[in-house]
Structures are given as C-alpha cells and as structure tokens.
Image (cartoon, rainbow, N blue to C red; front, side, top):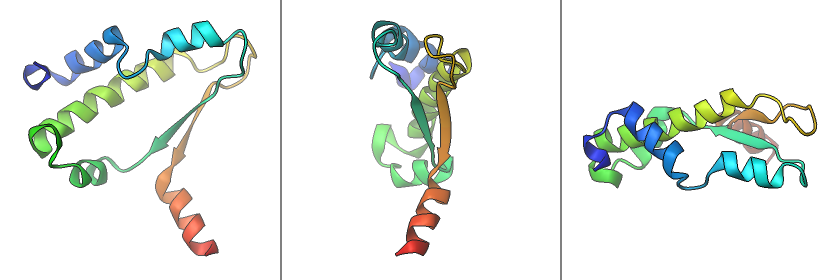
Length: 107
C-alpha cells in the first residue's frame, strides 16, 4: 500500500501507473495534432496539506502522497521544457496567491 511507500516510491508508482493521467502518452498521442501546453498551478504546500488534512489518513500521510505526486509531475515537466512539435515552451508555473491577489484587488 502507498502508506508504506517512500515519497520517491509514490512518485515512481504515479509515473508507472499513469494515474490520474499519463501525461507522457497524452503528449505523444495528441502532440502532433494539437498545441499542448501545461500550466502548473502553485499553491503553498502547507496550505494544501492543512486544507485536506482529513484525507489519506491524516496530515502526515496526505503530505507524503502530495509530495509523491509533486515529484512525479516535476520529473515530467523537467523532462519536457520544450514542445518538440512547436519548439516553444511546453509549460509554465502560475502562483495562485499572485493570481488571487490580483483578482481580489480588481473586485
């Protein structure tokens, strides 16, 4: 069970299983036909854990699960800085706090 795995093992399991989505396969299948771009929404880690502390058996286990998914996503993004079909940047990081503060100031 994932509860007994290290963060690195969780990340590898995510990459091997393709859950929730196999980004590598999606990129290979649709890349020649669609201009695919990824936006990584950044939210402070402790805020995320605190908000969902009741998931996955408590804050410590949920933190481990989130860290494993973050590691897997980071490995995918680092392996694909450029879209090989368009030769443009494949992804960007968007900080949610900056987005929220901009939105709240304009309301």
